[in-house]
Length: 261
Image 1: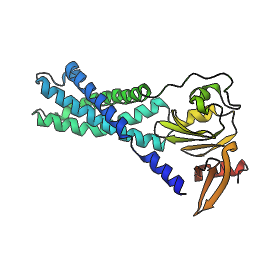
Image 2 (image 1 turned 30 degrees about the vertical axis):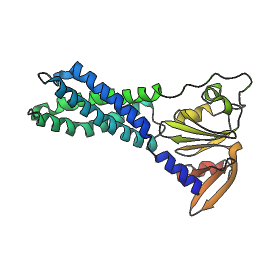
Image 3 (image 1 turned 90 degrees about the vertical axis):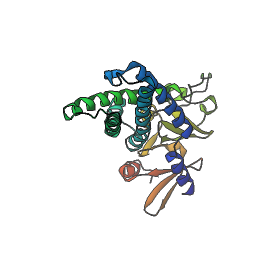
Image 4 (image 1 turned 45 degrees about the horizontal axis):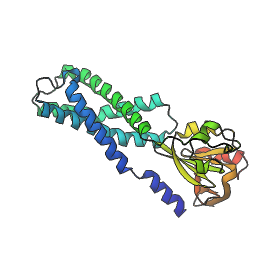
């Protein structure tokens, strides 16, 4: 159980290096918006003030997007991309709008009551752009899969899934896949690797391999199962690698019906 707890803490840890990189990109985007002056937001405002205004708004919105996106992905890892962007943009709008109102008031131009609806719409448009930018950043900085060597295909796995793995894992047995924020941790007989992929997409590509989803963040291959541990009202599947995959109440019946218990 200690190992499982350690892995859970790893999943909940924030990648501060990636966060810092993303916020730097958001700051650059803020400078671009200060030059672009969308919606006439900084017309007549000195450029240094305009730049500070937009950098503050975009960095604040970006930070909110990082945190909200992390929560959404943890709670609903199988959301389609359009739904993820929509929900994230709504959350970002709720967070950013008070900051915009405060900044406008500090600059001596409080938002009139009859313009709040229009301002909310403008903020939402920017939140949608920020959500899309966040997804582009994630894809831009992920490592591309290496070329696949001949004869390395693993029986039962689709070529698409194999192509995502590094060469050293392509002939290994797949034990499980575990969702970690934007990534999946692939547990194999030859070690582990993080790949950029959603759990729902991985489950579809792993249909040729006998296995089950046991938790919203876990899919386990039958060939990777070593033992079943029961205790404290919890059920845990111990993998051959020593890692432990939890079984949630939602998937307990599925595991029982498959004859794993």
